[in-house]
Length: 421
Image (tube, rainbow, N blue to C red; front, side, top):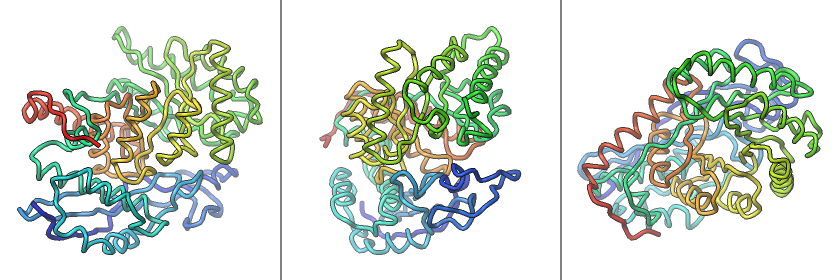
């Protein structure tokens, strides 16, 4: 089976692109908008609708394989690619169309070597283009081989065994109070994200607003869950706010996290991006120091690496330095979904927690494909995406996984391991 035609269609994401630099500099919210001038190149406003590009591969039997290019909500900062226009993805993919048409779909590993092995795309859209095209190629290879996308990724990683659904992390956006009831009713495994991206208005100059919220969340989960046996992990993304509030003083941050542990008890606690040191080397050094200090104090806080931990090389450096307990494998930042699978396998092999994440600023298609990658790599946590609506994102990711688990028993009733990498 071959690829006959290639189409690129301008589409949209389930959320928005936000200028993180402007927000961290104190941009004021006015309803859903931010007031002020953008600071990050490529932004026309601080908040603007997200763009995607659907890459469609028409196969020789008429099947249409599909993947979506997207970038994260906070693009253009912390070593990430800038926002793109869909026409830039179209031009990038058109540049390799001649090599795609007629491509043999029996060798996913070989196709991924082709995709990642040389500079196929302009640097400004290299990862976004590879992200969408690799999804479509994975879909095409799975169809050609009569298996699930997760099976193709398992073979790529040299893994086998039955697929299992991965525990899901759901995010609230700014609706950090109103969304919690829905998260609890749907029994999210990790919640609520919280979007604590400003010290003065959301975190507190001494962390007081964040502490107040953690205490409220603890009580609300108990109230809504009632007598049911339900114990989610509290996973907060604080966008470097602890570092900003406490001047990146490790001892002061640890003292504050001791209060957070007490406020969250008895729920387990994960803190994503506790500080932003401004570059990769400094981020690794300060995160490693914070993690060691928390261990020395015996505080049960898992630190999650996010910013400055974008590419395979970045993730390898964070893992080697022991700079986090949890690595956020932010799928659009990795380029091809093969890189995301390899990153998750690397994190797991190091004994760390593999979080198959991404962004609210994706599409239903990239979320579905991410679910297959997470299952194939045996990730510990997956982000409910796209969007910030809780229910819709949970539905997309969970439904894709339960369907795949059921089909796995039919398509691979006995363990099969492919050639691997």
